[in-house]
Length: 215
Ligand SMILES: O=C(O)CCC(=O)C(=O)O
Ligand SMILES: [Fe+2]
Image: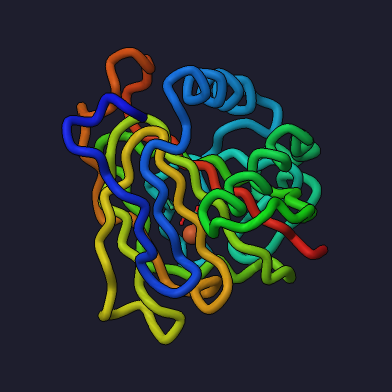
């Protein structure tokens, strides 16, 4: 976006992990938010994920293309209402390809993006350090953020502990992680409630990760 008081530069946080601030302008954020609201509706809508350990995740999630559950992918909501997962739209796949090219400064290369995980964070939600490792493809993960800012903690593939870099992700920001960082541990220790752009009309934070299943 061009209305930042101080422009935030594109930054390579780790090899293959690139933060592109303000990649989506307000109009694009609004369109994406409207789509998320549609996807959140049942059947196969927003749900709370229960972990095999008995706890539950504090984010609420809806999936497109493939349904993620701990720890795998299915075509139906196997740990919820059993409905078929909503389709992954072709426009979202084109957006993912463009995002990777913009982040890496390369020509767009066709890639079969076929999964979106949409996570909703209320003011208390967070996400522990984890790897996105249930995909068979090594294609980069594309992350788009809407609404409240958050602290996005980006570590290494070696383990969930330090070293890591804390990046502030704001509404409209893009973060791509691939190559040597594809399996880096990452998480969201906190969001910053009340920081969403007023004109967006979202209380809380949404994050979409777009992935290639390789399935
Ligand atoms: O909310 C974020 O920025 C990260 C989400 C994430 O890591 C995931 O969905 O696997
Ligand atoms: Fe993740």
